[in-house]
Structure formats: C-alpha cells, structure tokens
Length: 136
Image (cartoon, rainbow, N blue to C red; front, side):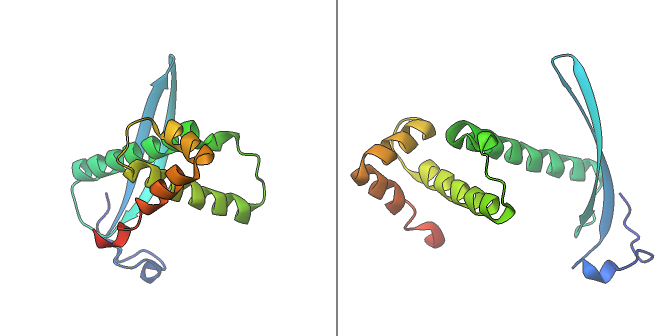
C-alpha cells in the first residue's frame, strides 16, 4: 500500500485518492495454480492486512453473485454480442435476481423464476416484493 500519493500524475481525476495498492492472488483448482496481480486505488488509509480483508470480502460477494447469475439465468451461456444489449440484459438479470431473493417464499431461485414464467399471479407477487426497495 502506498499512501503518499502527492507525486501521482492526474491524481485529481480520482476523488479522495489516498492510497494505491497491489494485491497478489494465488488460487489452486484441481491441482492447477494460477497467479494474478491486481492494482487498486483507495480513498481510505488502512493497513495492508485490512485492505486484504476488504478485497477478499468484495470478491466473495462478486463470486457469489456471478454463481447465482450463472446457475439461475445461465448468464455464461448468453450469446448476446452487442455491448449495449449485453449490459442491458446483465442489469435486468441483476434486478430480477434481487427480486427473487427478496421474495419470502420457499424454493430455490431457479424454481421461483420458472414458476414466475408460468404463473402470472406469482410473477406479480415477485414484482411486488420489490415495492419497498427504497424504504428500507
């Protein structure tokens, strides 16, 4: 972690830039190890250990979200190639996933999605579960 950012060119382009860091990732899957280096900027001065915790938490959330999107919506199998269409569909999938998660009913997200496709009343129930999104 570098916290002396005075000499960084164009530092004013990043609001509240206070730290620049590097994270080294190593992961082993089925006996194969891969390594990656990621660079990041931060608006808080924290020890490297704390940044590591925050980054792990962020990627944990990202990985869980991606897993749900792939399992529930088969996002990885999407053949949409136009960038704006892919972005729009990704946004719609994330919104739909959020609504499915908010619904209090039993059953997996995939089952809820399937039921909503077949039953307009259940779809309406799913959509109404998002009515209080900005109240809470």
